[in-house]
Image (tube, rainbow, N blue to C red):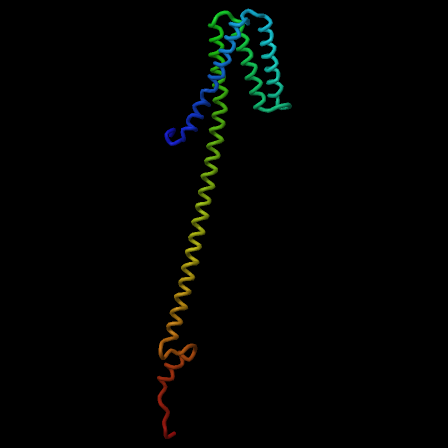
Length: 198
């Protein structure tokens, strides 16, 4: 199936599948760079990241209630909370094992959330394709009916033209008497000749 798709669509689909891993890996790499530049065991940096993560989580809870936001805003807010929490731990920790563990968990969660969106997109795409197929089938049916109707009209017109031509040809034959006279001529021919002495 991929062989039938354009290369740009294949690359776009592959980039879409790799986006969650790229996002969590980018956060981990930046946090480790931050760790190497002074964030290791920095209480102020940890408090900053904790406050940002808590703020994003609070915003996600408010927007997910449906009163002040929508699903997209909630997803962005919760994603930000996770990213700040991962960055805070990866920047504060001195070893690499805990940041890698959190990176793995974050990547799995990101793929779980993305899978739900991909499945919803596939369902919407399938429903759209089915609607288009039904519409095309209806269009083909209407076109077939119109073709049959047009052929019937053409055949009726051709029959009328042929009948008119036959009638005109018959009128042109020698000895043809049109109308009721044509019925009277055979009857007159069969009448006995009158008696000349009467």
